[in-house]
Image (cartoon, rainbow, N blue to C red; front, side):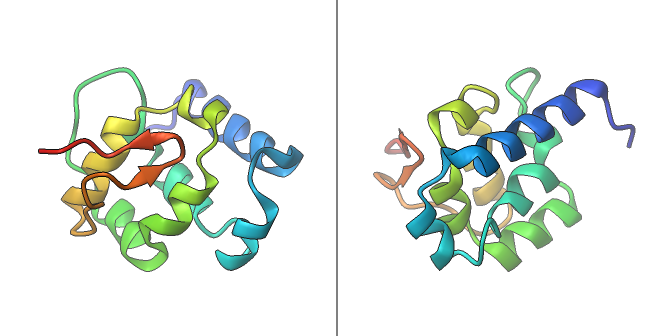
Length: 114
């Protein structure tokens, strides 16, 4: 699996947004200081805006299962939503056996009904 320059730029953007205060610091403390970032970076190639939905890798699913989606969703800011596909993030969670309930907020995105 080759890492593209675009993937590196997106990862750096996500880290930069969070480090510079894009996330709610009180909520982040509940999630072990940026723990949810692991899903956003570790599953990055499966949540890029471009391309088709692709089943996530075992490594990506391991992160989803270990970290969980609540912490990941707490980290998602509008700036992060501009760089990833929220629909794909929800698809990844479901594919990894950790579906978010309909009506759940992940950042400002609301999981739609079936």
